[in-house]
Amino acid sequence: MNKGKYVFSQLMNLIHPEEFDRCVEKYNGNYRVRRFSCWHQFLSLSFGQLTNRESLRDIIICLQAHESKLFHLGFTKGITRSTLADANEQRDWRIYADLAQLLIQRARVLYTGAVLEGIELDNTIYALDSTTIDLCLEVFWWAKFRKHKAAVKLHTLFDVRCQIPCFIHITDGLSHDVNVMDILEYEPDAFYVMDRGYLDWERLYHIHESKAFFVTRAKKNLAFTRVYSRPVDKPRGVKCDQSIRLNNHYASKEYPALFRRIKYHDKELNKTFVFITNNFLADALQIALIYKYRWQIELFFKWIKQHLRIKVFWGESPNAVKAQIWVAVCNYVIIAILKKKLEISLSMNEMLQILSVSALDKTPVNQLFMKGDDKNDDSVPDNQLILFDL
View 1 (cartoon, helix red, strand yellow):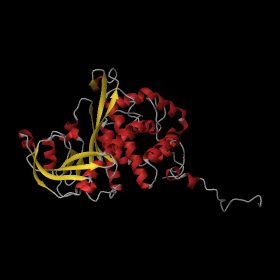
View 2 (cartoon, one colour):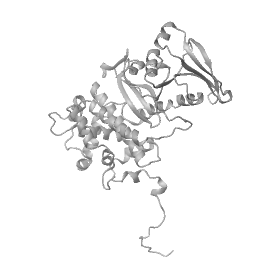
View 3 (cartoon, one colour):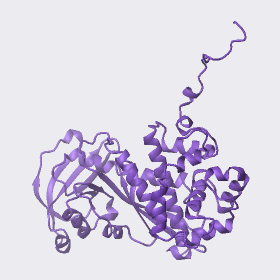
View 4 (tube, helix red, strand yellow):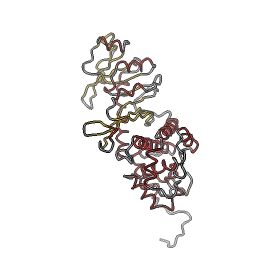
């Protein structure tokens, strides 16, 4: 990073201008735009994300308070609330969705070879889940969820090894989780881990036909016939490991192949889980551990809701909401790229807390995230004049 640049500018430099311009040109984002381009819109929303601004007015007031720095931050002068609001309403949200996908590709390359503790398999592991963001029905009327409540859903495919979201689909709150399985393209030999909300036999069989693997939990009323039982290691918690087929007439037509049923008892939780998967080669304990790592996507949802501005939206239209969510994802991935490139030991939470109060500092980011012990070195520099001989 270049010395003398503001921290915010150093972060935005991680975005390749040519890649951003291609995303804008694809959707004609700067058509008839004179001053406030898509890049300026992205900078404004990113500034609001990283500094925890509550509203568009909050963003504009903070930027106007530092008007002398705007040029060096990459902004145009004379930003107004109405200009930013109009951009959020009119500029195609897919510009920032495509940018996020480019950043995700870069991040996944950097995190190649990441190791999961206890996992001996080399397969890519994805966690599939959704989270609901509550909205005000009177304002966000288009996102009806309940009688007196609105909401949007973030359907997310999360790369567990890289800790990066690879796919996000935004719908209203009424959309069922399993519907997103129809638009996913499954990667051969990859594991797709999901909860019981995604238990749909026809869709699971599509994963099986795609040469990919699924891991989910069985429902209590699962009707099946045992075909074969494997030896199990009961002291380690595996109660049974079976090859089964479905008994139900319609279910067996939707999933005609055999699959695997594993019963596992977790001693720490004192709870028994029943997993089903179409992978017959992995050790039963590995399957149980793979499902345990599904919790990483829950932590991602918790993190992004707590630390990125998606619970308070800066626009009312579907376009404005989606643009803000995708800019939030872009900033999450930028921080993940920075963390890996500089080999920063701090957590993402700690990094964002530091960035929120340091965006307008001129400290090089590699020094910004140094441990306090490294910054506060009490030793006397060699070139320091010694005035008193103690």
